[in-house]
Image (tube, rainbow, N blue to C red; front, top):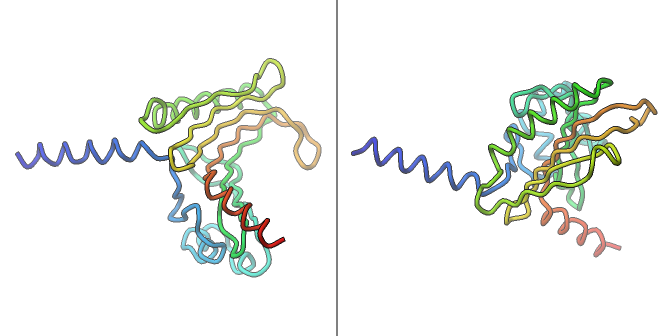
Length: 187
């Protein structure tokens, strides 16, 4: 009887967890202040010069992080507002080989569809066309503004080299809008 109750309880907890897009990564949550992110154990472990981040650098990038069962080349942390708040994470993987990027995109899409596709309260939308403009993507949005967006795109890097990119974004539309409004109020 106790085992059956525990099984039902875990099923209910699992089902409710799928109603929300992930917003916490490595113990850091969207909405944390820049100071809190920089003081987190995770940032201290992976960024040897983390003290530099506290005083000088608002947005920053960490390299070679694991998420979704794979190692991503880069993870960008984006902050806005006053005080500065983490509103978006962008994981990405560049490749010179189109097939490598296509395979990664397909594997990640399969995982995300398994996690969020068809979940109550999460809307899945596809956009773009690989054949027409070498960009396509899928987004999953929950009822609280949480968004997970997967994209594949062929474009130039900041250095001018063309790459096939796979991007994985996590952000909250409500938080982003609130931060934009607070910025406009300061003007």
